[in-house]
Length: 291
Image 1 (cartoon, rainbow, N blue to C red):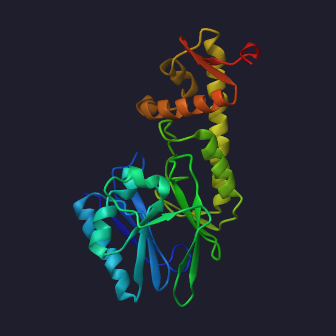
Image 2 (spheres, helix red, strand yellow):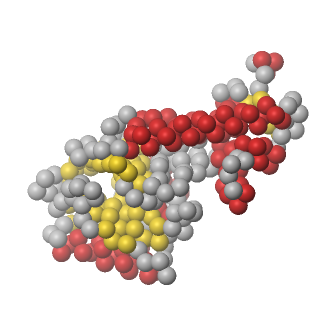
Image 3 (cartoon, rainbow, N blue to C red):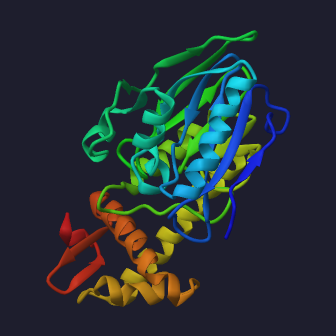
């Protein structure tokens, strides 16, 4: 059994940040979701992730251990509603006797998890302590409509959820994601000048601006391959399954079911921009006659 790892207080020299990684039902290559305790005396817990009983016991021991350090949990915050981020939300809130905070868009997606405070873009969470911490809330949709990031501007620390990962990449599922919005939010995060990003999956990311911009470049590079696949399909067009081996020929076939979702997200973006069209034969490259 893979056990969760508890990281010592302080993340790469960052003050008043603790980390705990628990096994979750996440997408490979990730296997764990990171939770973060932000604050000195008063603490905000981010990502009540795990649904597994053994991992929950370890997570609770970590959270309750904060009290031995003279710290009090103010609330549990979720970055977004995906199962590998909120699998323990209701359980941990009840066990610890603390409220759950999330974006308003999360409320209808979290079922029976009560949202005590609906966080919005620009909100500031103030945490008391010997050196008080102010956390700015950033609404960063694109991966999910309710996605939030949390920025400690004083230290340059960004808790970035699923905007990027320390391992693997991020899926944009067209059923709830938006590729154009996601790219715009990555550009926004890159402009923050954060010193370190703390992702939900993988290790802390130093100099995250470079990674945010690499993510954008990677997506735009993939977009060019999608356009090439559309060009090759001709006027008759092609289905998603027909385009997939061309646009994602560099991806292992075992990953094509996930890649197919990303392909559709790219096509929807291109359609909105007037660069792709869909019809009875499938998708094709837009032409001047479509204008």
